[in-house]
Image (cartoon, rainbow, N blue to C red; front, side):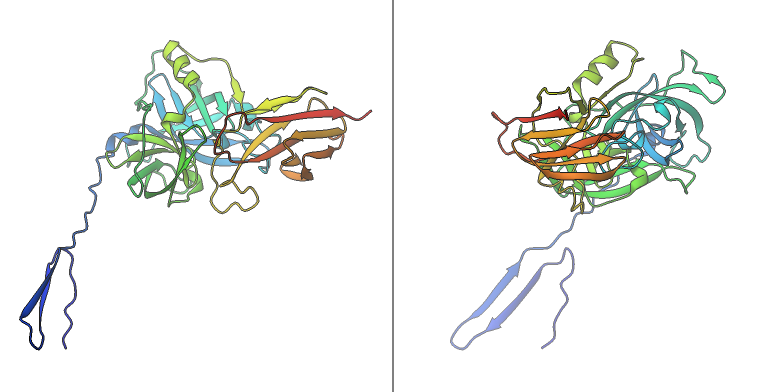
Length: 360
């Protein structure tokens, strides 16, 4: 018997002659595999930026996307500051170099290798969403021209990705002079307990693309890339959009870490917005949500948690104490606490309560 290979787009039929039966013909439908067309991403080369931050504890090259013509760009908080309990460099919420010396490199197009350098300042941050808003404030030689305008892309409020769909992360690399475009597929979605997509998993893990704009198969901005996870633009805080529409943002506000007051309960509402970190067995980010708390002073005491879930005390990324429902914290500087709750399926009535009881 001779076997014929099955080709793409080719119908296959064959006949069998059986004793006492006529000829039976089986016809199989043609197999067709669609190859998606790559959208024209050329214009996105003017929206993407490269970020460089450096201080005594860290030197990073990351990415961002310009979202306002006055020089406001969106990136990840972890690109400009300490964004997680286990990260080195200080207490979560700490900005690298004080948040005022972010080097922003703006390209003229995707193949440009001579970007224009600016200086940016972090004006907004959200640790739980891992998002930050940076404003370009000047050049290495002086202040920014008040009339300066930049190419940008407006982030939609209703962007979604399709399961298995194609997309592109456009950002920068410390070793390649021009921008880079990484093709990826959406492999899964992480839904929070309020019915919103907290983020999408994609099959590209590239640390230097952290903060890059992520574009769908039509070339439209749909999210911010976070090392294998895409935060959709629909999750950008509404307050940031409102403030940008109202005028310039000059002050700084960092959210996502709660400062405890001695003896008083602090409450938080778990809804499942934490960043999913593929392969992070310690954090179990697929089933837990992490909340960060700062201690009121350098004083020993007890951390009490209701319900009695996992709680860990850290110092500059190093775990000091851990337990369930209650731990003792020493009187040392830069101590902070992470509480991890199971990702809820129904948020109604679910609350996390934490308090610090100082040692007498």
